[in-house]
Length: 256
Ligand code: ADP
Ligand code: MG
Image (cartoon, rainbow, N blue to C red; front, side, top):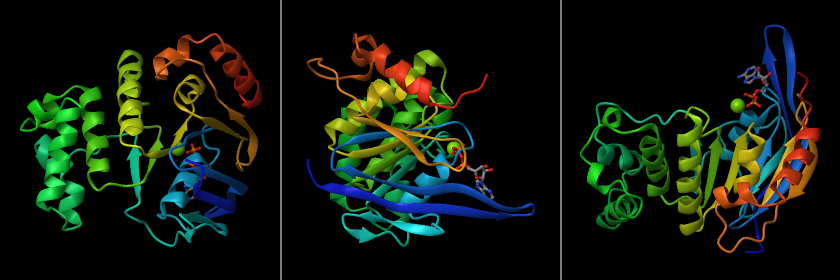
């Protein structure tokens, strides 16, 4: 639980556009320990998705580097699973066919891996729905299916980019509860991007606040609650939740 699994070192990113160069990220460094849940919060357009894409290996930084388990990230890796706002389930595939997609693409549809997928579907309440199509499921169930598809290839690290923001508030609370417990049960490390301060506090061990573009680290908040078995909803009710919220709110450059 103490070694660094992700190490972001002096990462900077410039985009070339028709109107010239845009600096999206400026010299960001932080590391994440195995099993840790870290959130990145920042104003919209500040560079959060860019940073996650760099960590995933989908984008190459203009400056600096990212290490995963001590190795420089040069391309996408099976150690990293990416979850986005939209669930990207295919409407014409059943839930089972959707969740095995990653394994299929990687030609890893072994009996053991199929068993693991069945285990995930059973444990997280989707087994009875495995032959249904995405349209027949609620938004929350679809998001869970998307997570199971991500977990099927057994990544060490999960990257979540505004993964819940398409859901209505009630569903969102329930889904974060589910997703959080799945991530913890499966012993994964998570880096989550969100602009929702409450969501970040309720799920994270640390919240990293980013500035307006170009994103730099403004502050890092260690989040601790003394509830018995931590869940996002319990954290929201904890007495010190408000205090974290107010501190982080003040630091986000939100101009209304
Ligand atoms: P966030 O996820 O925090 O909303 P993004 O990382 O998506 O922010 O984008 C950061 C900035 O970089 C934005 O100003 C955006 O317009 C710009 N940007 C993102 N992707 C590209 C791209 N492919 N080409 C040019 N500019 C981009
Ligand atoms: Mg984004």
